[in-house]
Image (tube, rainbow, N blue to C red):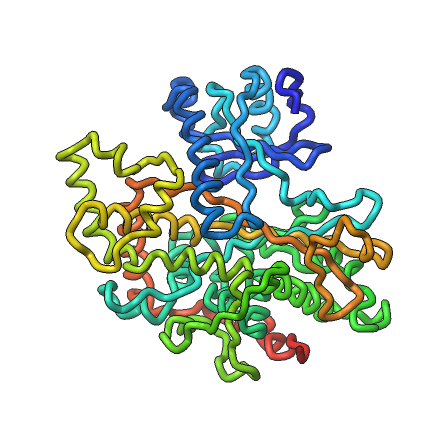
Length: 488
C-alpha cells in the first residue's frame, strides 16, 4: 500500500466487532482494522495517537509472540500497524457509516489517531485464480470445547452443561437472539466425525455470530442479531450447488439439497481434522474424564457407530483446545488469585511493569505462563502466571477459524504452486485445496476479569432458574440428523 495515495473509494465496509471496524480493499486481498470508541467520546478521543498505536502494536505482539507459539505459526496472520493519512480516515468513516448495522452505531470509528492494523483478507485467499470458480471461505467461532473440573466450581451444573449451551438460554431470555442454537462446541471438538457433522449442521441452521460463509470475498450467509428472520438456507444451497454437482458420481440433476449440504459439511469436517501435512498423531479424547460430553447437546450418544478417535494433534481444533485448557481453574477458581494480584498492584503500583500486566507481549510473557508452578506457593508470581494463562485461554475461547476452500480442477491439481495446500480427497470430484487460519486473537484486558465472573454467575443462575428448558416445538428437521452420515 502506498500510504500517501490512499483513496477511500478503494475500500469498502467489511464488518465490525465490539472494539474495531474492518474495511477491505476492492482489488487487493487486504483489510484494515480500525479502533472504535463510544459515540459520546467522538469529539474528545479517549486516548492519544501514541496510545492507540501502542494498543494496536500490543495486538500484533500478542498474536505473533504468544498465540502463534501456542496455536502454531502456520495458522496465524499477525499483520502490522500502519499510520494512515487522517483525511483518508475521516472520508472513510463518512463513506462506511450508512453501511453499518444500527445497533453497532453506539460506537464510532477512531478518526484521530490514524492508526490501523493491516491484515490479509482471509475471505479472499491469495491462491485463488480469478479466472476459475471463486473460493469459499467459512468462518467458525467454535467457543469453549471442554467442561471445567469440578474442583473449582460452586455449581455442579457447570461440570455437566457447557458454557455455550447455558449462554444460549441467557441470550434468548435477554432478547439478543430469538431462537436457541443447538450447536454444542463439545461435539465439534470431539474429533468424532458424526458429532462434528451434527455440530456443523446446527451451526448452519442457527449461525448467530458463530458461522459465516463467504464466496469470492462476499458474505453470502450469516445471521443478523436480534432479527426474527432465519438466514436463508435455500440461498446458501443455491450458491453451494455448483461446487458439488458431480460428487460421488451422482448425476447433475439428481443432487438433492440434502446431499449438497451433506457434502459441504463433509468437506468442512475434513478440513478441520486435517493435520496439515505434519506428523501429528491422533490424541485420545477426554471422555474418560467426563469432560467431553455436554448434557444439553441433543446429539444422541447412542448414534455413534464408531468410538471417538479424538483430534489429530496437528489439527487447528486440537491446537485451539489445548490453548483453551490453559484455563485450569475456571473463572471461579481464578478470581481469588486475581484479587491477590489486584491488591499487590494497589500496594506496589510500579510492579505493573515487571509483572507485564499490560504487556509487553514478548517471549518473557510467554515464558511466565508456560513455566507456572503446578501448585500455588502463595507468591504473586504464581497468581500473575495463572491470570495470564486464563487471559490467553479466554482469547482461544473467543477466536475464529477461517477455512478457505478452493476448488481444484484436474489441471490445477498437478500445479506445484498448490503443493503446499492440503488436498481433501475423501470423495472426488470435487477436490478442494484447503487452508485454515485463526483470527480474532486480541489480548483480553486484565481488568475484565470481575466482569467475566459476574457474567458467568448470571448465565448459570439463568440456566438453573429456567431449568434448562428448551423452546417449545420440535427441533427443525431433526430426523435429517440420522440420515446425514455417509459411511467413511
